[in-house]
Image (cartoon, rainbow, N blue to C red; front, side, top):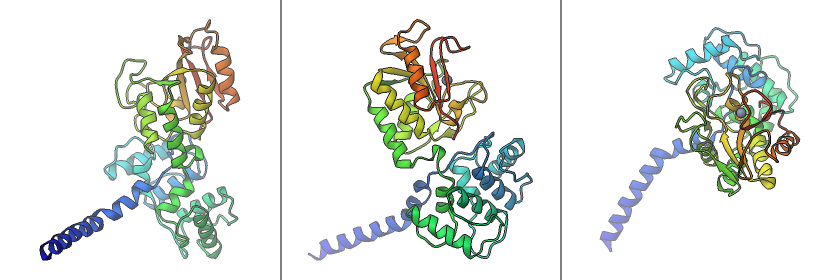
Length: 320
Ligand SMILES: [Zn+2]
């Protein structure tokens, strides 16, 4: 009996040590879903990035437009923090860049926080001073997102404020991707059209998204590397399209496209086979498929007749 008790106590001690050692790590970064902020983006999330860089001493203009000056500051910050310097602000960069602000602070980060609060419908003055009104708006925002309403804008609050690309919640995005992954009506390519093999193929993009992660981009020719959260409008569109046709996807976020392609923003899909036949100008369903993409909100729909699209249909939603 005594022996059993000793064994149990030892097991408990080990368990407690394990929980104490690994618990905090599991509860933080893994739970946060960050927006991807990239060159060409504008608005409050760009202010959030720029203000934090400025606050940390980087030289750039804080104007809400992600231009070359911002990209260069982001790359410097990434290099200085042991991150790959791709100039795209994703989860790893956010985790190191985020600045916590609280009541009594007066700085440019507070200014960006106020812009985010206004974006989410809260009424605060954008004056860079964290007073009672800003604190009350932060608490109200935190409550609405199920966060502890302490009025302090730390990493969890910033992640929720900046949202994920497309504005969908992490679980919704993962659920949609799971539906696509398991659909017998959508075939996802495992090799790029170029023949390149990497971890940014269409199937892997969907598998990574179903697992709650970002979809990887390729790093050859025009492709910028890094990763992007697939937009929920794209994922919803793909599911609805599969209700009318079976089809094969050749590319989502991976592959090399034009330098400013929406594929890199997680809002575009290329389809090369519909109902078992390769896409061509004479395909009986290609026109209806394109119309359906437009009806589902895609604003860039290309196919046979458009340069570079004789063998596939490209459906892209607006950038997040
Ligand atoms: Zn395309």
